[in-house]
Length: 136
Image 1 (cartoon, rainbow, N blue to C red):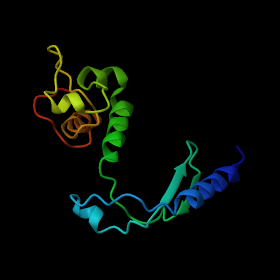
Image 2: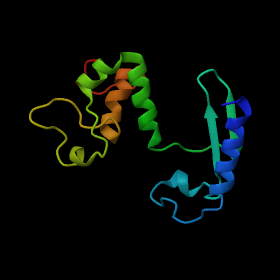
Image 3: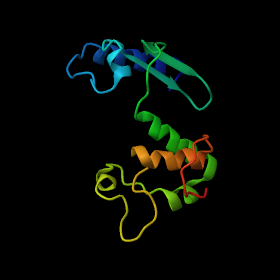
């Protein structure tokens, strides 16, 4: 892709989706209640550092649950997949974790993306949060 094609694509996406107003703000998350639901921004950063943006991409916002995926990525980058997978499984729905968390004596957490499992990833990534009983 030529350099400006990223920008044109983001602007096209923004134009196509900015008018969608269906849905509701999660009222149980106070920070989201303070945000304007009309804000919509897209940003893309390439591996070589180029930044492309459209819409409200410079508006400060709360990342909520997406922080779990970012933390999992940091743990993978810092420790490598083998070490992370010794502590955290990859079942993505978190359904089983809510129903008991472990399977057949497996000591690993079911999902990196569940709230409590994210703490394991923080510990593994060196993010400063320690999970009791977990040896990175």
